[in-house]
Length: 193
Image 1 (tube, one colour):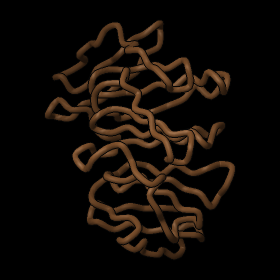
Image 2 (cartoon, helix red, strand yellow; image 1 turned 90 degrees about the vertical axis):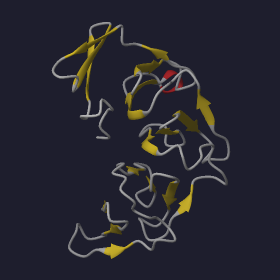
Image 3 (cartoon, helix red, strand yellow; image 1 turned 60 degrees about the vertical axis):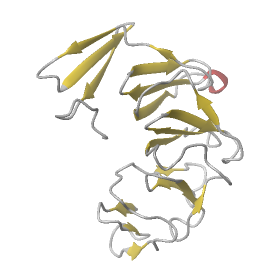
Image 4 (cartoon, one colour; image 1 turned 180 degrees about the vertical axis):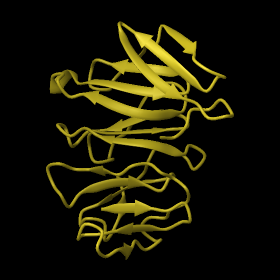
């Protein structure tokens, strides 16, 4: 189990929350991000998490952490908002932030920016029934909902209309009969759920 505090602390538990251990700040700092961790279903020791600036990986269930790859293609001004590890393709890690979407299939050795996804990323999901070689991904951003039919290599904007539901706090995006609900905060920016 992992828990992150908005007061700059992060903790792990190996016994279902009976006891907690502080993750040393040299590995992973809190800092207000509430991005969920991604657990590797093929290896229970491997977990991906972010402190909002750097995507980290542990190979010992949270005791020690290191950056994914030698360098990551975003800067400190591009806050990491979402990470997504495809449970069926655990080499594929998608990272969404303030300036779009990036993907690696090489453990972070090579990153590709998906330039067809625009806006601040808030949600990444996969259609796990789609073929692995043509995995379908959905990315919700401040600019709309994007769909990739080629494993994340490219995406197209799929919301054909955006409907204000009440006081500009929510939008409903519709595409080919599929609806995606996005809730916005009082400033008109999507909430980081």
